[in-house]
Image: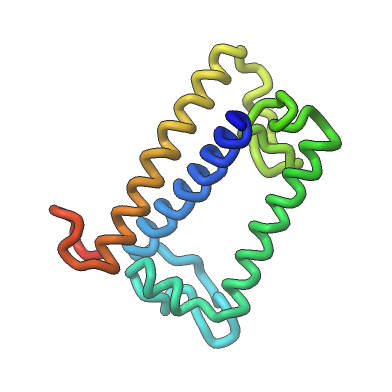
Length: 152
């Protein structure tokens, strides 16, 4: 069970890091050029996190969730076919989807000690991002619940 819990901590941390950066980028006014959907430009999205999510059309949300589900499905599939699954003693957090993590092979030359240090940093940053996203969510949904937090 410890491998299962560590794997899910790492996955949730990665999602939280992406969510935090996305929430920050939208709040800073950073938008992709072009259209998000027919008639909806990226630049027209509100600059507050939950309002921006609400402005995304339903099919766009479905595509994002489907893409995340496909990554998850293939990660589990490749874990069981290409290596030792994390529930059977494999390395938790190792991404098995080809080309998703380190597509240029930059970490191949790193020592095992450096890789372990990087995994530890990723876990710590993921934990902090989970707290950060929760703080921004509560600051948005419950005004005044997070001291010193500007409106997000």
